Length: 602
Image (cartoon, rainbow, N blue to C red; front, top):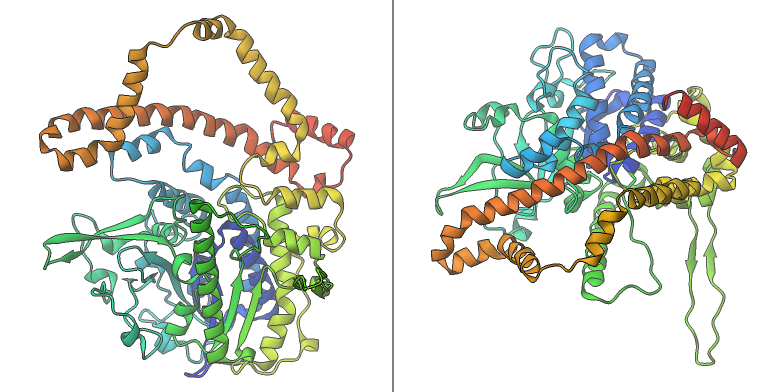
């Protein structure tokens, strides 16, 4: 691709979708590195799982661009960066970041008594396990304002002004979240954070009639420094806000930055997953004047249901999914309509899959055969059954096995090649580079799964099927573990059998039942009752104390279980998902299992 002019700018959008998206994006980044496209990216707009990997990639780019002169930077430098990420990201996520947020006694008790949430905890893990070690001489945690890139000899470098003439572009990173306060997008950049000041459409003012807008400061130095120093907002917290899945994690709060003087009350910005507003990061690219777009979309898509649930909860959940699907469709349609098909390279996890068009039952009770659009994922080296399973893989933040992670990376890599080659030959910011002049492919670690993805065997397909589950994956992969599981239960019952018999033979006093019910009512409804009956204010300390004691008891029990899971079950699941264990017979698998146990889970 050529040196950009003022009117040409390449943007990269990395969608949400948990670690499924993160691993898929690594494959797309690898293909872009092979093709020499990464050095031309000027804006990176990320959401949720895309933000987790996008922030890591950006830190490596900062390290590279500040260490080497522009003329000394080669495509191999970008290949090396993605290879490091390919290895380091899998190693970090193998620790099971989602479960680890619940595995600290001290952190769990802080959540009871202090202004501290699950989102704060996972931000700490992001910083410690992913970001802190990439750069030397930065704060701990890494701050957003420290992300500005200053190439050698250019202490006042500004990408929008100074990228012209560079072969290796200095990208702008946009981490997207959603604010519950106004329902708008919230962007984190190296310059500032907040709601975007400039809408992407001139008619936006006629449409958006919200009574308030949270104005964005010109820079972090303009923000409040006490009692909370928002000038030093951490990168990991911005990522946590972008990946703050509603209901799984508490909204991440930005406090003391705004105050409503008319109502004389503080405004606490509550941030959730950026996918609620724009799961592909398209707005961030268009707002930064991109003219060519590479969109890597590994987010969940709406599944067809023959018989959707009609109870209130099922309907509400389904309607929410439909609304999200509609937002995705409209965002992508707007992008293609305004930018043109040739200027957009678009990859998504359902690409290459077949479609059935089902006919109606006619007046004679007859039905025509389905119209079939045959799958073509094998054109890019992925079997349709594998592609279908990957599109349904869980969008979680837990540990992914080698089989799962490498399959997603390979899929992103293989799928994106033809799309990116066409884009390079036809986009308005291309130099019409021909495919026969492309450099040879690098030897990526995820190639080890290629033979299985092309010609899947039962064990491989089973692992991809299990990978769609949230819970119980280890037992599903290794059913024989049910034997020691039930044996352990029997041993516990045997050891405490006299006590069990005593409990079963005794009657629970009515006072104990009433006390339990009263405690539940007190903790659940006390805040509402206090508003209606002010004289019950005297009961607030007792209700709060009882509630906190109950939480502490449950957290202690839960933390012990989670530590056991991380130390025992998680390594077992990762071991079973090693590529070297694929296709082994039961006898061979048990032999490898005992070797693994003797080696101390190595």
